Image (cartoon, rainbow, N blue to C red; front, side):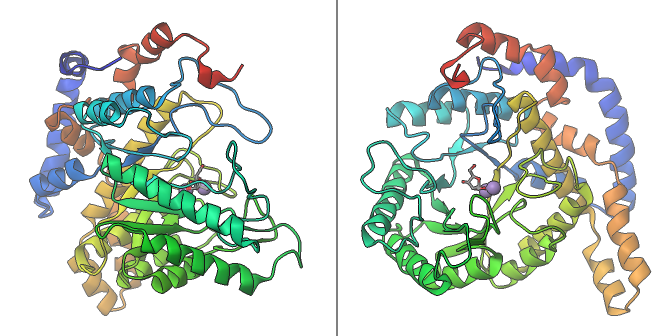
Length: 426
Ligand code: PSV
Ligand code: MN
Ligand code: MN
């Protein structure tokens, strides 16, 4: 299924009048505050977030998985689904592949399909947290950190293969997330595990094309529950520095212990020019991978406030690779991704409203109350008409979720692919 422009325009008609009223009201208010609306709209339109190839089907937990009907079974179908998201939201203009889950069979065809849907290939993700079919060595006791050199070599080679795959598609970065760690005290020598990891990452780094970057993702626990080798931003930062200037840290919102100050982490990494990538999701407890903005929208706003500050004040930091890393058992995955995309844009737009000059002045005067007022004034602004206007001007839907439903997207996908697809696994 491909959503055509006239389909979107048709549905937009019924929302146009009320949108115009809401937008005029907001634009008027913001203009009076000295905000340049077209500048703001331009930034929102330019902000594109990659959809991971593994998020188009229903996720699951270790207790079970409840499939969603009409799920995509091939990489081509996954890219078609991202095309649907992008047509509606105009903010999902990239895909992030996980290898070997989504190795293209026909590179030219996959590239052509993505190009036709205006989708770029963002970071490619390696996978050394599962054993692969016919693999000689097992990752049961770790990959890049393993005490056995043959295992480390296999994992290094896998990452080099992933770079090669990404290179053929036009990707420019490799994301490395390691499950390596230990389940019980005494199982691992912490120092050896870290040293092995550093040496292995340096080998991968040597194989990085000159215009590529390597993004090192950290996570405190899971699947290992006693220790994880790359457990926090400090470890990731250390490793990125050890590898070289093309290596960066990647922040996944769910990869922090409860109450961590993620916005401060983001801020310091950007100051040091070492924040390379970002995985969006939300969580109540751990790496819950819930819909972005569904649990802690104010925290998301504060994080975006630092991202915006960094983008405006830290030229030493590169452009970031943005990706949604969420999954769940109970929603239509496409509807969920639409909600995540909207939440990301909302937090970004609100952060763009923060009056940085006034905030700096209030900080200099130690006017704590004013500082809070400035942030909360931006946060409390209902920016949804602004997002809708940005979408409208880019050819997207005024109301993506309602359009998705009114265009019977899921029903059509089920008709085309069948209720139970290969992805259902039943
Ligand atoms: C690990 O929890 C992670 O966040 C990494 O980014 C992986 O690539 C992804 O999830 C896989 O589900
Ligand atoms: Mn992640
Ligand atoms: Mn995760």
